[in-house]
Length: 158
Image (tube, rainbow, N blue to C red; front, top):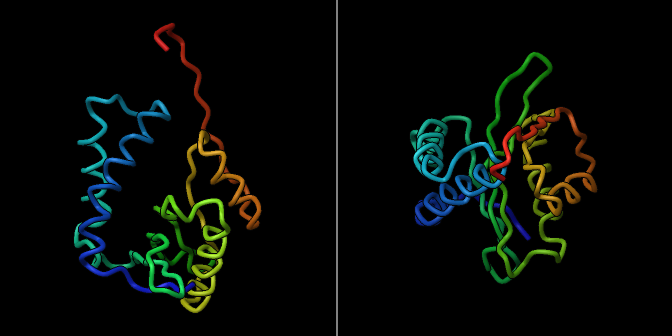
């Protein structure tokens, strides 16, 4: 497996799918209502990636296997902090036909190697609490929980 910069054509396919997926996740988490989710998701992506693939300090990569097949992608933001360079993973996906086969772990290890070359000292990410599969993968790779957001519904509507 290898990691390479995402191409523009891949980005153009990725973006609308990512916007929809993020909107759905925010609804599932109870953060946004369905009628506002798509617009809010679109706004967040436009704010975070105003220049698409050329947005400063944001890196989108594609993972490929030995046959040059697309395995997945990752979007990471790198910034300077008081304790050194840090990276935040905004999105990581493995194609559905490659899931549960160890590709996710291998992809994240490749990302770590690349980020170390960029002198990054720490990687962080957000994972929705309902995404137990991802949480298991991150735990197995040594990611530590740093914050918890918890909610409780006070109405009987759901």
